[in-house]
Every structure is written in structure tokens, then in C-alpha cells.
Length: 246
Image (cartoon, rainbow, N blue to C red):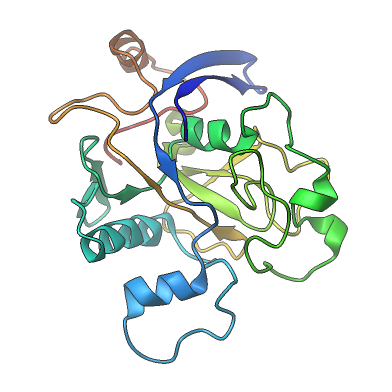
């Protein structure tokens, strides 16, 4: 993905924030059941629905996959995982979850529109009357060549949803196959506990360092913004990006 600046908006609080992004890499599709099996299971019977997104998994399982895939492909893992504590090494080359700012920037595909085309042509939603996720890349991609950024399955992101209001809940983006047509859009977000298993939730992976070795700044935050963030005592702004989980 090319770098750039995106404005994140929080309709509930009426706030907005500009985020500067460095270039990064993002998966063209959600992680499929076949990809999951190759990285996490290694043996046994491969899934029959190989093109379906891997769904119904926790945030912790998603970051575990990122590290395992990094090791398999010879990259330095992005995460240091110890129980429920997950710390992000922003200098690592390994696979990771995208931040909300990265995700929304990629989803918009270089446009300012809420969706990147006619909904029926780009997204699996309640309009399609399907009873579960559909094979990835079954509808049109956006201008960046990314499929299912809206619809099919919600996607885990790295960020907390709002620590003051929801504790350790992590952010979800993109909407799912059963969401009504007014819901799916590039800016829509929800949150869930990192150990929750939700049938309409999957993920895709990002890759690329976003900070120098030893840096305490995550993707999208300037030093000034990071200092301002540390002073917040109430609800955090949309896209609040931590380096370490609770």
C-alpha cells in the first residue's frame, strides 16, 4: 500500500484525527482456511472449503498465526506473546494485524467514498441472503486490488476499540455476510473481547516495519500525537494504537 494521510472520524464523539501512514503491505484477501491449515495445523485432513475465510477465531489466535507465518517464511516475528500480554515490535519485518488507520486507508482504495463500488458487486452482505462466509475474491476488488474489504467477514485489527469504555476489547472492521446494507462501509467499526469467538469474524495480515528499532511509536503516530495520546484520561479517539496489550 502506498503511504499517505487519512482522516479517521468518530461519529459517536464527533471527533476526527489525521493519521500519517508509511507504505506497508496488506493481504489481497482474508486469510483462508487453506492458508490457516498450512501454517497452524501442518498435518491432518485439509479443509474441504479451502477458499473460505478462516472465521470464528479469537484476536489471540490471529496474532499467533501472524507469528507462526513469519517464522515459516523466514521473517522476524512482529509480536512478543506471553499469555495475554502481546507486545508489537514496530521494527520487525514479520506479519502482523493492520492498524485501524492502515485498514481504512487500504479499504478506501485511494477514494474518499464510504464504499468503493456498488455494494452488490463488491461485498457479501444480507442482500445476498447467504448463510455463511463465501469464498474470498468472489466479488470485485477495490482500486488497490484488495478483495472483501467490505462484507463477507469482519476483520480483526491491532487497535483497542476504546479502553476507557470497553477495556481490552479490540477493533473489528469491514462488516460481514449478514450485515444489513446500510452498515458495510470503510469507516464502520465494532469491538470485541480478544478471546471472543465470533462466527462472522476473520482477518487478513499486514507486513512491514513502521518504526525504528527500539521505537515506542506505532504506525500513524507522530511524537506529538503520541504525547497527546498519553495524556488522554477519558475515551480514546478512534484508531487508538497501542504497542502493548492490557
